[in-house]
Image 1 (cartoon, rainbow, N blue to C red):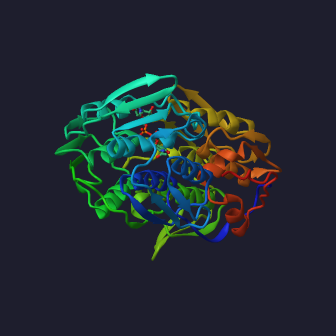
Image 2: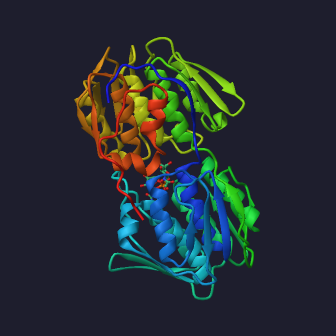
Image 3: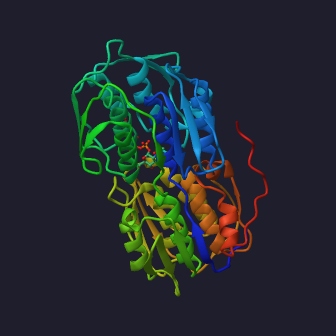
Length: 419
Ligand code: UD1
């Protein structure tokens, strides 16, 4: 891509990757046809669809935005290594399958190279619900032949994945489960909304205390995926760094409060639209400090994008990464583009430079990839981002969307067809 174009126009965001994948897993909790709308056309959805097919589900509509998942009376209970390895979110079938089948074998995950990302809280929660969990030949094997029983679970950290797995196991457990220090992300609220429509009894969605009253069975529903706040924020920052004027449609600004406040502090004019918001930037951005924290704190998935904003700002700022220690690997790539950054542990000081300078760079995870694309949009000359399959995992045709806004960006390699 060639930097320098000012982005202007409007862009529509689809449903959230981090919600859609879990809604697909939640479908396993009910026999019959679940229909999900606003499903993003991304690689991770293809991988999750294949995983569900191998469990005996019939999945249709991949790539159309509306997915139908026909779940059999008795789904399979094994998630293969080749799929789980390529997408960590596969482990979200753990809770639903344990609840439905009383036994589940899930390969230990891989996915983004962004830190150790343990499973201890997932496992502890399921054990408290009465499961036995063993690690054999690279597989995590959880069993609860007599069913799960409601309990109290306190999470050391409000882990998104652990909250979801324990929640999806608890909806069919006997009695009441309380998850304390639960994650509060909008995607968790979305899953709770779908589970509730399916017949689950859940109090406290969006708070740090979830109370789940187990029911005997759930029914399939049609559900619309919550808009992707990270994709929305990516376009918002794209507008800011290119001194652009972008209307981001199908976005929920209440899920982006800190990020939009930071953009305002950086000098952007952010205004509300009926179905989203508009970001106008007429000057070089000021640098803004960011500290990543669980929701409602500043999202770690927006950290690379804001690092790029700071890299071209007129000051200096501190970025503190509290969620994934390895996320700063991305900053090494920004250095290749001429950014001025010093890191110390989980802090980075970014000093803005007048211009970045295009170079070949490598995306190491989905959000790093988005950050590098934003950097390429403002770097002098040509930037070549490799590892684009990472971007395909979470962005629904980012190249076309940026081109439509006036960005000068081409895709050299077509996406590999998957499943
Ligand atoms: C999800 C999102 C990811 C986002 C992250 C934090 C999906 C598919 N991914 O990831 O985009 O960046 O939330 O908002 O939804 N941890 C443990 N033990 C556990 C579980 C987690 O130590 O049992 C640690 C992880 O190593 C990490 C932190 O907790 O340092 C946060 O992880 P978690 O909130 O679980 O993130 P994910 O669900 O993996």
